[in-house]
Length: 171
Image (cartoon, rainbow, N blue to C red; front, side):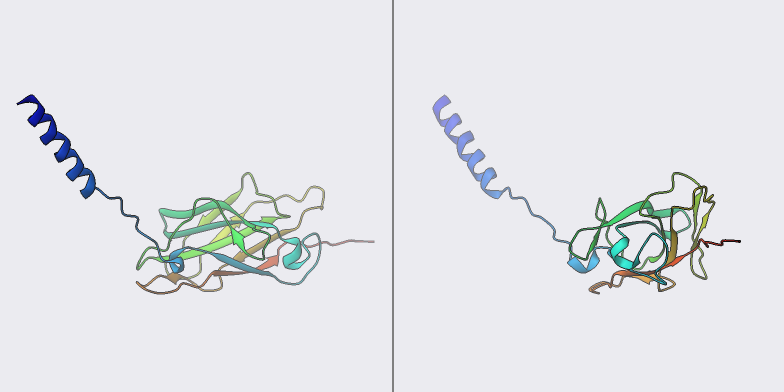
């Protein structure tokens, strides 16, 4: 009796194990949020795209849902850009972005992202150029907003960076 019970339990375990499977859900490549950039008017420390190795992104789907919050985006060495913890486009949400780079460094404080429902969003940057050796560049995304629709292959978020510091020498 005991032998039959153990045999029945073993057979049941084999049947259950055969039915168990792990399914992985693949996320389409087009849903990964990616970035591309251009540095306008090559001057000062950051010499065009070659001199820009990292920038810092703010992005949100509304005023309270920041998807990127001073997130570092850095070159992956193959002319692409990458960041930690991949984020995906959510269907139907309007994303807005802004970015900066302080000579490839993050600003520890003084940066505020404002999500604007009806226009481009923007950054407010409090900055003091004490030694003049840094090159602060700034951009808002090329489009007012990016909205993902099911099945779309989303383009990269495009930034054109502008130098926002001036070097004035009085003689």
